[in-house]
Length: 137
Image (cartoon, rainbow, N blue to C red; front, side, top):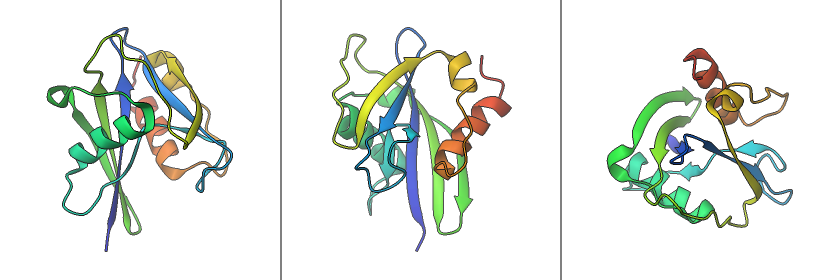
């Protein structure tokens, strides 16, 4: 059975993107850079899943009308999907879940220059490569 993981490049009204930092107790890739998102549950669409995961991990709501699929890539039994999402409320505050210990809002140029490092979550590398390949600036 194929697992689907949906994540998002979450953009605020200033054009900055949210980057999360996983806590050291996270079961997968502790201490690594991350983006909001997670597994799609049975009978859930990837769009609904990414919106739910953003809310669970950050306390933020996204505008469902402005959710844009950027890519889908298959790795073994897992499909990685990436969306671009925009905040529903302009002045929303981030409230992190247990999964992450910190966050930053970064520019598209900083997003393009995120580090590639050995042992990183393949999903993270997909996002970094996508941003670089698509010429985001």
